[in-house]
Length: 145
Image (cartoon, rainbow, N blue to C red; front, side):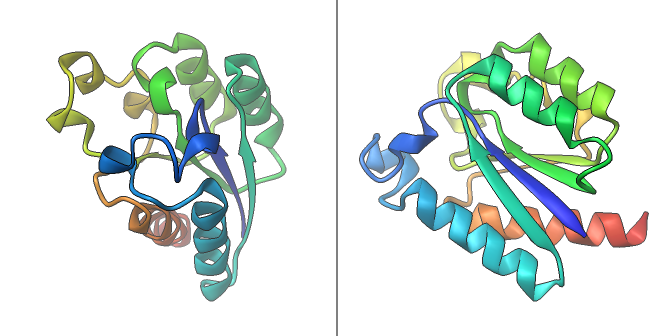
């Protein structure tokens, strides 16, 4: 089983970006945890981060036939990107939307997700642990389907 982890804009700043909201862990910490968790379940995981919407759209489009599922933290694009939503839908791969913080406890504009309706699940508010939970959940979903 092969998984793709995508992280959106500003997540490369984890560890220094608003630690009261996002914690003190780095993107490398999150990717390492996701990869280690995948290995525990006999899966492999590749990670990619971009601040550029089009690069994330391209990565999703190229995932079809290569990966069995996607975990995506679209970050701010969650609330704005029809392009990411359409790419997820077009790829036809089971996708989990992941957020470090609970977006429903934040500003009202963060309460709407364009991508969640085309994902098999949405996970948020667990900080770094969310990366492990998203992997475990996606592996379980893929094993059941």
